[in-house]
Image (tube, rainbow, N blue to C red; front, side, top):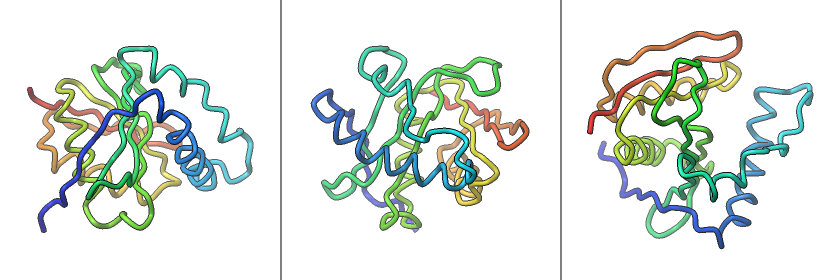
Length: 162
């Protein structure tokens, strides 16, 4: 099966409120999986504004057929503490587009746009994400792949060649 025509488009400052609307829904959905007791406020995302002021942070829309169907936030924070060039901070594909290889295509584009050492973490309480990321990483042709187990999550480390 071929990957559908997917593109990444940087989120302009003018579209920041639109991204927050979509991201708030994602954060609440994610919190239902990883924090079902509601210990943390899912909407307390202190780094959001920094995506338009810090150069190592990049917000992208995921688009298919001209429609926004998700987003990916890329930064340079290393969940493992081992250091990275880039990391997936947040990644969301809207429910109607899941299982149509949109996510795999978007991940490949994000990785290809930023070669180097990558990391991303996925919570074990998110089985869909835990199943998705190894496929997406492999489809991107990543090398030096490893997985670090930490308490309630897996950290994927890999290299994307230039």
